[in-house]
Length: 377
Image (tube, rainbow, N blue to C red; front, side):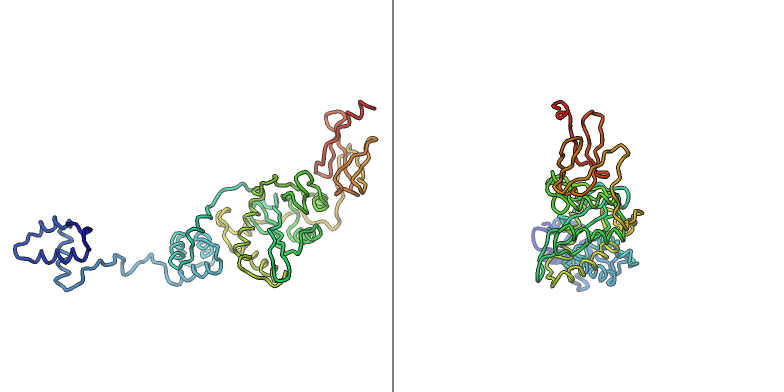
């Protein structure tokens, strides 16, 4: 009769009673109850001493590896302060704060579970993945507006700019709209502080586009004159700006979710406080648990005092665009996006006679084929 067929306590009491009976054979009883002689002697000894027969904890009275109460309190405190941080982030933050000994990430997760600070369903959503990154800071910035949200008297439109290599938050601005002048003002302040990037990637919406076929706007032309290349995400593929999209998720979870703001100033105050934490304290899994500030360096390209004119090759034919977007070239009226009104564009010959590239600074605008005109002239 193994222990599992009846309650453990009943089986043990029965065994003790039979073992004490005159003429009993311990070996036979052990076989019947499915236990070893060592276990039998243990129960007989405990019964003789009047001790209980309940299972005793195997946990040692002293455990050198047990997490201290102060360390456990630090873990819980960081989780409460940063509800979206997991075991790995908290461990690296403890190391940065010289908390010793810093438990393993798995131990920290166990602590969080004990305190009811981990939602198992939510944890499944945060699996790490690898993504491409540019090899140096300022090679590419990703820029976008996060979906707007309401505050007491209006709506906030968060403008975010993220450095692709370091994940450093260049800009986190609480804007009242998504207009060109608003974005230009915010970017000017960041260019003055961090310098100019080589390229900025944006989506196809306003103010940096009007759809996949209309990628030139007053804002992108201003950036081009600063010597910044502008690229656009593939239509319906927001993952092209994936790092900034992921930043938006973190921003929503850490700052915006379940909070009510009185005005834009309060929104900006919360953004500024959290941005410092994001850049300098929050370990980032995609960069080996480093903080973004440790990998970012300001650009060596300063923001100019005077907006430079676009430069062209000596053999380019340069023309000024009229207010309606028209420009005259070799007896033909050529239409270009109206955003170029008042700007000087270049016509660049190609290897094919009669075919010209239309360029603005380093940007290719369109291609002009004059061969049909020549054949009919």
